[in-house]
Amino acid sequence: QLFTRLESGRWQEQPNNSLGDYFEREHLGRALVTLDANLDGRTDVLITHLYELVALLINESEIASESIGLRFQATSGHRDAIGTTVEVQSAGDKRTLQLTAGDGYMGSNERRLSFALPDASNNADIVVNWPSGHSQSFKGLEAGRDYLLTEGIAQPIPMNTHVQ
View 1 (cartoon, rainbow, N blue to C red):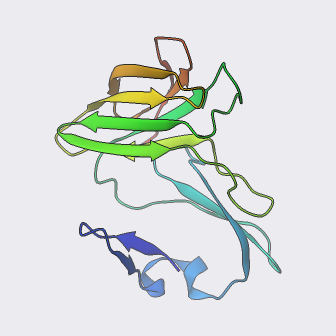
View 2: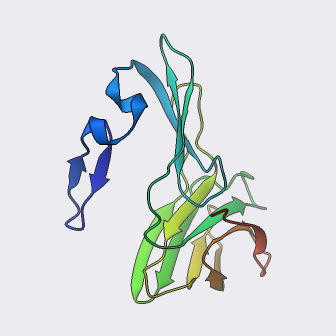
């Protein structure tokens, strides 16, 4: 099953016949892992099954707006910065994201937070609240890129530009 979140905040199941070959058969899944396998800024999924080979589903949906990807490196405590909370502000839009763990049986999501920017914006200001309790601000991060944010270092490190 694949669900789309509506503007109202409700979820709507998408018809399987509109999603591609994978969704036209039944599967007994074990875990779902999210990642950006082809570095295009869209979230792809890897699915493990009980009686089938692993499936990698590449997200080929139309890009509605540019996104920014964030990776984290803590210097106090757990290096992967699990529990980091990020406040994102862009063109009057404000959202909060959190880096979590415990993703699935024998699988782990890519340690990356991704967020789409509102149509009117090509950059965002963010505040990172690290698990150690420290807080850090980063201004004007550009859309269409991934960044490595390291606790205690003022400058984000651009990692790559999304492939289009």
